Image (cartoon, rainbow, N blue to C red; front, side):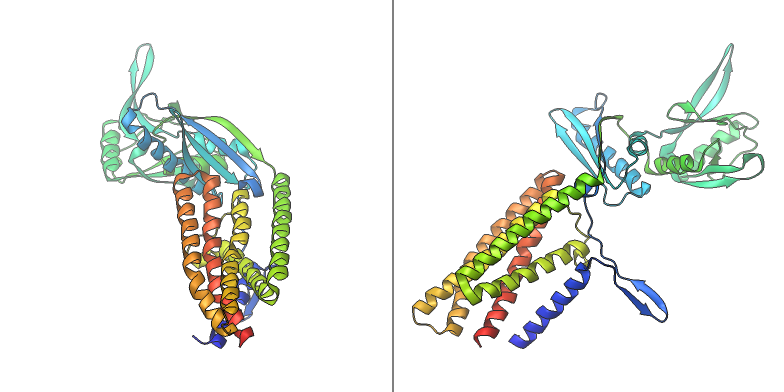
Length: 420
């Protein structure tokens, strides 16, 4: 590819990245309709503020060989609940401390920690029970029809005396058969609905006839929010293992903003020092490397915001910012190797153009080995680390890959243009 073509490719990529990085939301007007193109930078809990919950799983009734699977099942259920709750950029992960097993839940931007705790930790175990009168008490006999037989639960509205929010439920094929058999043998009798072993209000309707369609309605004095949360919990399923909250913390947005400000100051100082060092030590070549470094920073920020439209955008945390700042220094490492090789070639009597090509060629093995080892480290950190370490590993890996592009493509193209 010619120098001119490569130069245009670099210009286009840089302009597109700048467009994504704009702090204000641009808008386009097409056929009289205004469309806004917004690429917000997604911030983690430590930067945005929000709620963090640590749940302890009770494994006392679980066999040792089944504990890990049970913990993963709990994590999956809680993750579905959190996603249904509509919290963006949430994180649900497992943790083992000795013999204890825990669930860590990060809910960025969510200020109502009590509501989050109730939603995440509640079991929401639904079951239907028959009524048997035994003097002088009433017995509730489990029917075997439970929330595990549900396919879907959704908020509906009744009419007349039953007006207000209700929960419509639909059973699976097996659940439909159970429900038909239960209603058939309980015609003119009450059938009671229990939630977490508690009889819900108005929870013993009288069966009028056999119900074969697999649909039912849970009525009660629900508010709209209560009905929505109950539907979320029923759809997500019951927790297979009891959990209880051992720590509940709220991070204020002021603390997150202070962390962002300090990170920006640290990053700015680092960039300025690197820029001055390269310009002072390598002259014009160093200034070209600084220009490539600026393009690198613009490109990486755009990748964070968009995920290159192939992956989800990166959720930036303090550890992620640390990985990004570290990668800035690594971004000029390849340039230094190339420039030193070029100096050697020029001392040996090569022309500047030949020294450039030989410098890149002979520095490539060192650049490749250095960056691949960093990528291997990032992969290990991501696969074995906790959330904070994973954030560091992701941003470091993105920085390493982007630095290889800017060193091999951007810097090389600029140098070829200048020397020519």
